[in-house]
Length: 151
Image (cartoon, rainbow, N blue to C red; front, top):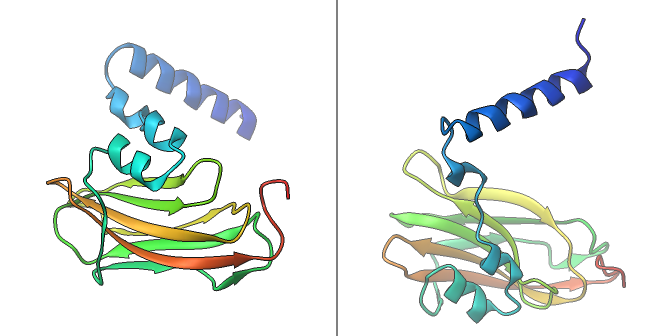
């Protein structure tokens, strides 16, 4: 019987061989490094190729009013807009502003949930970027009582 560890090891090896042979698209493993390294909301929008964001009722953000532990804050982003290509979750006062980026296609419903670290009380944004580069957002302040980024 094969162990779970060995199965994972074999899967990684097969994936590497398929990627090297050109049988898997490399974009599957790509991410926007500049977006994740950005320090401000404006820098994230620039890295993602989007214009200045505008507030919209068609984008919803799910976040608590108060996060007792900033190390595990549940966050959600959703939209009812058409032609959405990216959904982002941004935390304005984190060392790196973008905490999550989701690629959206016609086969994917733009409704995502995740958990993130918040170092301090901050505005949190859910941003929908459309195919034509428009950025629409919803914003909420989340108060953090115990910081999740070492403070």
